[in-house]
Length: 187
Image (cartoon, helix red, strand yellow):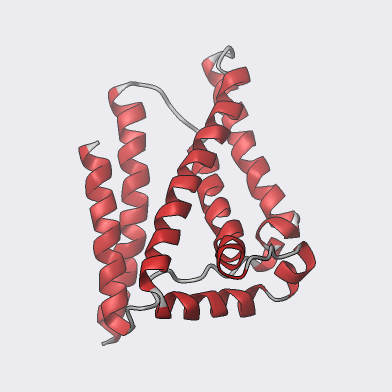
């Protein structure tokens, strides 16, 4: 049973990095444009989903916004309660997943525009350095600014698919990641 869990976890991480490598292959392999700022866009989407998953769900279900101190101090408790809510309301969990996915893509696109617009006039080597620095800057902001994603401790992201349990959930998530990877390959 443990080997099955290992294979599922390995393939899950593999599909995430597969999507990254496919996009890098498109940019550098076919177009010849190196992109050192890809980490910024990945991280921007992840930080958006992490920072807003619990807060937006509680706002939509209870009508109250989670303050900064409450979010930092009781993030795990709030996220666990949201996961329990998703287990009882699977359609709402899927809706929040899709909504946060679209929101994360929008934030990543905005970050890409902000990073690329002033830097596009630079030569290739300076553009590469600027994009590397922007990705590292976003990582340092997220690590040291606790209201965003709880700083060094990280944020508890509720499971929108908590209505599926055990090995079935892992297989479901793996198939979802494989579908996204296939979609990335097709696009």
